[in-house]
Structures are given as C-alpha cells and as structure tokens.
Amino acid sequence: MDEVRFTAVGRRKESVARVQLLPGKGDIVANGKPYEKYFLRETDRIIITQPLVATNSVAKYNVSANLSGGGLTRQAGALRLGIARALIAAEPESKDLLRKQGYLTRDPRAKERKKYGQKGARKRFQWTKR
Image (tube, rainbow, N blue to C red):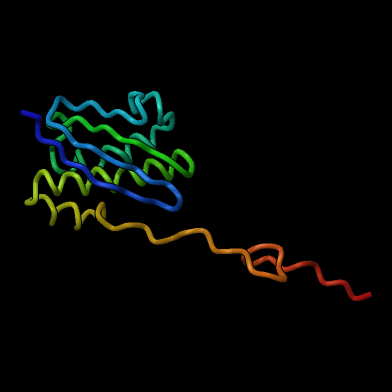
C-alpha cells in the first residue's frame, strides 16, 4: 500500500511551488536538493519553515517541493504557501491557526504591465521642449 501523501500548490508573483507532504522526520527537499543548499539566505529558510513551526509539525512530515519561476525569495514565499495548504489537507484542525498567522493568504501583488507610449509601467519617455 502506498503511503499517505498530501499535495498542494503555492504561488507568489511568477513563482510556483508544487509541494508534497509525506509522513517522516522533517526533511525538506527543494528541486532534489536539501533546502539548506538550495536556499542560501537564512531569511528564506525561516520563511519556509514558518507554517511547520506554527503547527508543531517540523519533525512529523517530510516536504518535497518542485519549484519554478521567479527568484529564490519569491520561490520561498510560494513554498511557504504550498506547505501551509498541504498541512491543512493533513491536519484540518490547524486551519484557523495558519489563517490567523497569515500563511494561507496568497500575496496578490504582481508585476504591472508596460503601457504603450511609455518606457515602462509608470515611467514616461523624457519630455523635450525643443
């Protein structure tokens, strides 16, 4: 019999994290690498483990994630949302706690599109008098 597996998707800007939560001893793997080797910044590593720490399930589950798009910090944010969503599938009673901490809210901010007749989304071409 195949072991229980909880899956979820987290997104942040252009980054997508496909997360699998398996019963285990607390290993987190991102794109086939241990997350300490993949995410070099300490802040990114803290962001990723926040939902697990909040629910006291750091040593209960192994996390396997497939990350794509964006930069490392954005991928860390997407991974946090994916882990929080997968934790709800595993432990529905933790939903209120994760919601209160803000780990289930998808950050809606995205890059604003460039407008025609302008240099960028907001910046205009320089005005010349003569």
